[in-house]
Length: 226
Image 1 (cartoon, one colour):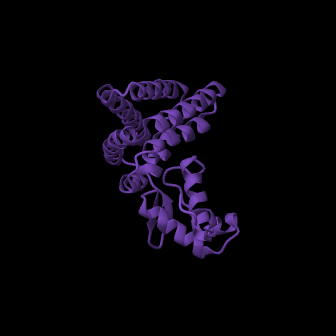
Image 2: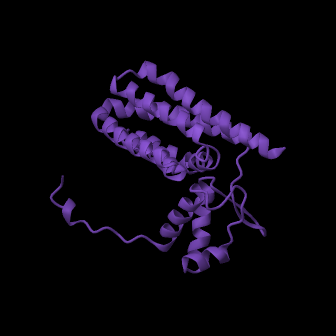
Image 3: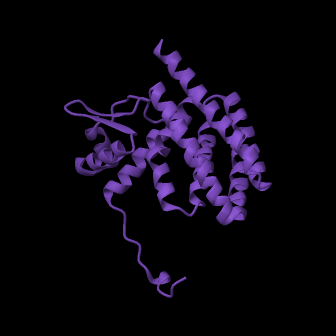
């Protein structure tokens, strides 16, 4: 650590950054549904700010695909299509597989320790029947791959899709206990493979885990369209 590190002053976050984070979390946690209008006026009133930081926050979330801005119509939470879910899952598998390989090469002990901690919390959330706490922990579990991979470009690549993946998880997987049971078992398998340093065994486990998420999401979307 540099002698100056302890003297650095953190810059206060802007209103736009605060609004962006809070709106992002609200969408991920299901407070707004797919396709729901997110009115600038209502958001400004709810956050107690002017429309400018709200408008900037919506633009930032549009960049990640979480919000769709339609000229003269307003801003709306994204509505995933079957094609988009397929693309997201393929993208996710590619990035998670590589992030895990990097993380294991640079810090296996720290990665496995964090995943073990999260598994215990996920088990507790499942025992309590807290679907949304489980979904948040699920997102944190997969995010840990990127926190430990020591590659900023890979982390930023995942940032482009993480919010949409988390929103789909909350809306289509988390509310159903049997889906959470299957999910939890697969998370345990992932950690077991990593603890054994068995990346060959990890590949099919991770692939099946993400494939099941894709199938569940596509089935739910197909049912909703009927």
